[in-house]
Image 1 (spheres, rainbow, N blue to C red):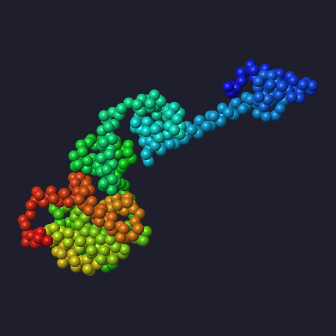
Image 2: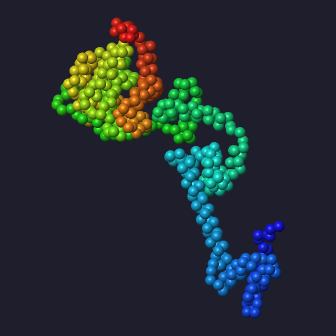
Image 3: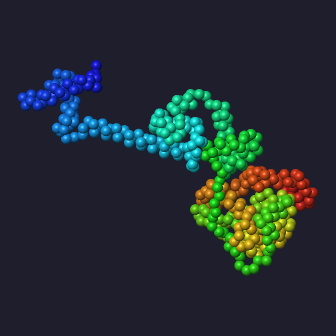
Length: 421
């Protein structure tokens, strides 16, 4: 049987006293520690350490006294606990904040339990609870263990089901929907849920809508006089499709250099009817977007004669070829003032959405080919599935279809011919 590791205090004191007495007499000094150790069953080296420490404590030998060693040990323990507490607070702050400040009142028991689950092996349950309680977020170890053993509540089960759908809808829509559009899209999918619940679950899961930011100027004023009037006067409304279009150009950064994008948007439904990408700001960029818009509408059997084509005074829209093509299509040109984004605010707003939801959100981009594929997919989503707040939280194409159902137009020869193809 192994000897006990801790000697009784009375035995320790007796051994030290006997060893010190023997070491004081020159006749018995040699081998005193070994003899006392053998007599009392104590390891001689252990006894030697005791005697040396006693001599230090009594001031007969230099070194750290027992009181000083105890005080140092206590300080080291306090430093260790403070470091652990600071690390707990640091990790808890990052966990609870989720990328932004979150009031203490919003830190629910479920969030605390999740945090403890992730860090219990590193810090321990009781130290975490102690630190959080001192920081103003009370939770007892018993509360944690109770939460781990009881079955999930009906609300927790329902929240998990809602959250899975919310995550999928958010991902399906480029990760750009905030609470309002997420709530509308869920209801469109017959997934009934309160808006406050959507807000709570999205906030808890770190889901949020996309934010916009401004970029450098892309409009270069054209040289020479421009007598075209501003027919909109900042009133971006239209009673039906193909009454008012707005056009503008924006830029996109790729690894291969700048890429410029031109869009033509129907004011009535906010539908993108034409678009084009180019490595330069030549007239062909704006002209190709216009051609696509005219073809899109004509291919659907719609008449674009008389449509107001509004743009800024960029050199691309002032070009002779662009003006001639508008005249050939029976469109009416309209322009805003130079350097005033409000005169073409609807197109500027789309550019801002486009860059926030696609260019920055899904980038970076390798080259124009890489971006062109993504733009085609984005425009398809924007026209057919993205909910637009200005038209009642429905997609642009659906909004036009609703208008056509309530305002049927007589069939024309052109429409009949198009339907045969």
